[in-house]
Length: 201
Ligand code: HEM
Image (cartoon, rainbow, N blue to C red):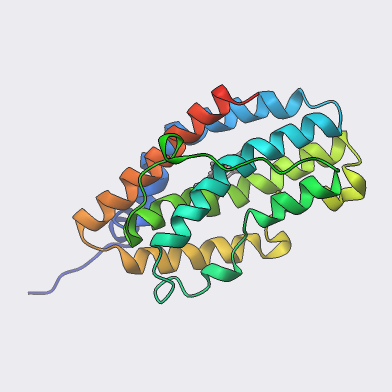
């Protein structure tokens, strides 16, 4: 028997496409909550407070991902953006680096697939990061742009880095069960972040 795949149905079954579809509502909510906060930024202190919110949540996530990810599979993990960039930006603003979020405020990340789900959210945020850095750069001098390294993401390389992440991720979760595990953690990562944003002053 000859099976003819049409390209569209192949694309729809890829994990990255399912993730995009199934996290759409959460992404939109996060975006709305953040845009309000960013618009309200008036000085470097307000910006430092936004950075602290990201540092504490993403920093907690990163610690848990570090412990669970298989770097034999995600072989460029150590070259990807890290929360140490936020610590550098805070230092450029002479602001303190806060402690990271604890287990109660974070999704469960105990294996490689769960690590991939959380990493999908963090890596995807590099795309919005470029928009955030532009918005902030227009408002503030932000220590001559030195305090914008985190939101600048991978600069010109951001789309390439995103595409290579998706390619690796898609190859590592192919069964329905594996894909469901990644999607569940991605949604949980967005949900916990929404809670963190709502509580963080
Ligand atoms: C002001 C805030 C934000 C804006 C304006 C924004 C905007 C965007 C844009 C324009 C894209 C690319 C869509 C595309 O090319 O298809 C995107 C993708 C994405 N963003 Fe955001 N974003 C924001 C914040 C965030 C945050 C804080 C997170 C994570 C916590 C996040 C996670 C993602 C993810 C995972 C994707 C990839 C979606 C996909 O699978 O293609 N975003 N965002």
